[in-house]
Every structure is written in C-alpha cells, then in structure tokens.
Length: 284
Ligand SMILES: NC(=O)c1ccc[n+]([C@@H]2O[C@H](COP(=O)([O-])OP(=O)(O)OC[C@H]3O[C@@H](n4cnc5c(N)ncnc54)[C@H](OP(=O)(O)O)[C@@H]3O)[C@@H](O)[C@H]2O)c1
Image (tube, rainbow, N blue to C red; front, side, top):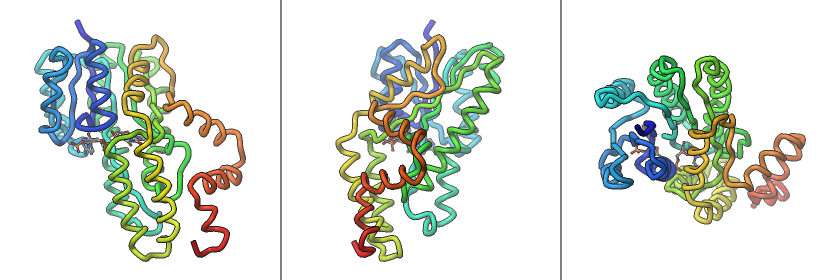
C-alpha cells in the first residue's frame, strides 16, 4: 500500500514538482489547485499515482468536497503538503487592505483550514505529517515584500505551535523554507512591484531598485525540484526536522540573520538589493 499525500497548489511551480517527485518516489498523490485543467496532465505521470483534485484553499466547501472525494476512495491521508500561495508585493503603506486580506486568506487562513480539515484523520491514525511551505522571507522580511513576508512569518509561528500540539498524537510538522526558486511566482511578484515602481508614488524609486534586483535573482534561481526533495525528506525521515532551508546558500543568510544585530542585517540587505545607493543621495 502506498502512503497518500495531499499537495495544495500543485498546478504550477513548486507544488507541481512536489507532486511529481513524491509520486515517482512511490507516494499516492492527490494534487490539488483551482485550475483543474493545469492538473489534468499530471494523471498520466508516475504510473498513474497522481489524482488531480479541484480545491481552493480559501473556500471551506471546496476543501470539504476535495476531502470527501479522497475519503470516498477509501484513503486515509498520511501527509499534507501545504504549498498553495500567492505573493502580494509593494510598500506596506501603500498596499490596499483588501490585498493584505487576499494574502492572508491564501497563505495563512487557507493553510490553517486545510490542516484543520485533515488533522482528525491523522490523529485517529496516530501518525501523519504536515509539511508547510514557508519561505526565507518567513525569517528575513525584505522591503516591498512585507505583506508576503509577514504571512510567511505567521506560517513559522503557527507551525511551531502545531508541532508542539501534535507531538503526542504521532503527527509531525515541518516547515520548508525556500529561497528564490525559479517558478512563475517570480513573474507574479514582478507584476506587483511594477505597480509601485512605475506608479510615481513616494516609494517608486526604491521599488524600482528593488524590482531590478528581484528580476536578476528569480530567473537564475534553482529549479523547484530541490524543494520537492526537501519535502520528501520531511515526509520520510524517522525524525523529521522542524525546518528545512533550500537552497544551501539561504542557510547562510538565515544564520547571519540569527547571529547579527538587526542594524547590520539591514545594511547587508541594502547592499545586496542595491538600495544602499538610494540612501546615499536620496535621489537614485
Ligand atoms: N518561487 C519562489 O521563489 C518561492 C520562494 C519561497 C517560497 N515559495 C512558496 O512556495 C509556494 C509555491 O510557490 P510557487 O513558486 O510554486 O508559485 P506558483 O508557481 O505561482 O504556484 C502557486 C500555486 O498556488 C496555487 N494557489 C494559489 N492560490 C490558491 C488557492 N486559493 N487555492 C488553491 N491553490 C492556490 C496555484 O494554483 P491555482 O492558481 O491553479 O489555484 C499554484 O498551483 C508558495 O507558498 C510560495 O509562497 C516560493
């Protein structure tokens, strides 16, 4: 019997890579997202071990329907990979509140809703794995990614509490922290940043510099399979780590963030992104 895993946001990027990788490793995978047409081709891969499933993580009825479909196949889920996510970019002062809400509805409340919906079956089975896809931005909040970064900080915090609550029930919780990964997510962030870089607002010059740095980073970033490999470890290790950071260079950044005073981390971020030039003459 193959162990079964539900992956959210599997129609693109990291979620798709996770679904395919896990299926090749022998898992039975329920690959979910809103765009079912993008999921359909997955069913012909990996010996038919991937089942596409329509699910919007912001819609409780849609979560219930998807889980009923899984249960209807006589399946008890061993794992949940909470991957579905969006990125709302822009200055904290300027991003409209409804955009903040959209960010949290997907990355935080959506993740919580799906986890809550599968936990009873895992507790009853006395075993299970929850793997939450966080981000390096869940520890280091860059300027103009503050809305997104704050949602990923929330994922870090709730995952810690969940891990501690579930430990006696045999359910283990891990967070994966990807750095830049080459997926369509980068284009989504670029579009968001362009709104503020080109909008003539008070942060336009800074947003332009930040956007240019981001544009250099994303296309040359590693492929999503490195995240899929970390997810596989979190699902199969006898004692999974509470956190997996990929790629390796992001581990260095996270260590610096932990060791150095915030003022120094601020300077490093300004240097890396090119924003230090803006600060010098106030014009750039
Ligand atoms: N790429 C990176 O550099 C990077 C770095 C760190 C962390 N991450 C995290 O990795 C995860 C996946 O990102 P990605 O890079 O693979 O982005 P992506 O290619 O844009 O994929 C995002 C996925 O989320 C799904 N999604 C969005 N809203 C949803 C909703 N309401 N319900 C269900 N599914 C929804 C999308 O599917 P539908 O639109 O079909 O629903 C899509 O499959 C996100 O949590 C992101 O924050 C990415």
